[in-house]
Amino acid sequence: MNPVSCPECEAEISLEVTAEVGEIIVCPDCGVYLEVTLLDPAKVELAPMEQEDWGE
Image (cartoon, rainbow, N blue to C red):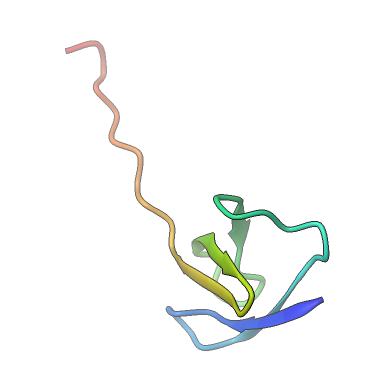
């Protein structure tokens, strides 16, 4: 497992060995959605928010 730091609350998160770039994970401490951006070294960033078009 590769440890990373949550950019929102700075909690340490262990990425699974099977983690892939682009995968979305949830911080167990603050609940924010994070996107895996690098694997070596491991890095996560806040996941982009999906915009709803509500049929417009």
